[in-house]
Image (cartoon, rainbow, N blue to C red; front, top):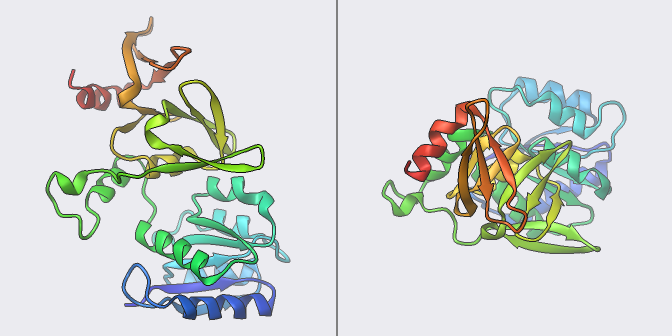
Length: 265
């Protein structure tokens, strides 16, 4: 079945342009072209349509009369079949909030068919939202990767975009010592510095598979950078990392067993 999309934008020319671009990109991740089966001119209409039909993809404007696109995305987080959301907007200043809502992508108008194609393929290949161990298991079982050890390998090339001095710097996954949750965004601890990113910790967990492990609701660590395990005075654990500052990362009790298993101790 072709992936079904809903376009949400208060401007008719913008909706027409998105329809045109979706036709231009042709077949995508699921081997069929995206089928636009609904259009909404505001957030309220979008919620009605989303409650009456299962969509795979929502192309969502942010600034609209009534409910904003961010409010619509927040309202559908509880749907059993939550569609992937790609924000399409003329305003770049809402990206942090968008990725905190686990958006698949954030496109700033104007954009071309190739940029939209990459966003759509990324969104549709992600499938339904998952977190924690479910996300890791789903990644290991992606179609076409097989069931053996090779199929469970993480992607060879993982880069996280970081904005620095007006430039986009791509940080290699292996260079990340750990990631920490912050309000509305996350920070990456690198060997010599700390940088902010516009992804939530859940989004980073989905991107950084393999040797990364969630050890606390606020921390995602690179197991290759763990130097020591230190018991704390309450009977819990803390990790000492191998960055220059020998940072300490708290391990929650419910994650301690999986951490010991992954480290083979």
